[in-house]
Length: 136
Image (cartoon, rainbow, N blue to C red):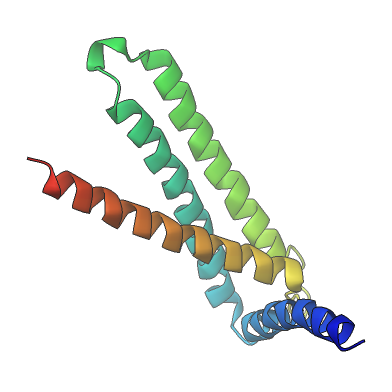
């Protein structure tokens, strides 16, 4: 019986983190939430662009198909706009009523996942830099 209560307490902690983040986001002004949505979209788009750059960097210049490369970069830009729209929808909303949108768990999850992906990309970049500098 005590094992069941311990297992039930663990998901409650995860929800509490999202609820606290959502509460913190609700306390921010509309302008701050717009900036957070833009930063999250820019961060996710930059990670995707870095992955594409890493893939193209390993290919010889004469083997790169310029049309495919341009299409992938254009698609990355469109994905960035879609991510910004999603962040705007979750954090700011489209309603210009007197009371602002209350950020829910989905908005908190969007911000949290964006931050975690950004931290992972930063660690990956630092490890890649260390590898590049250590090569003879």
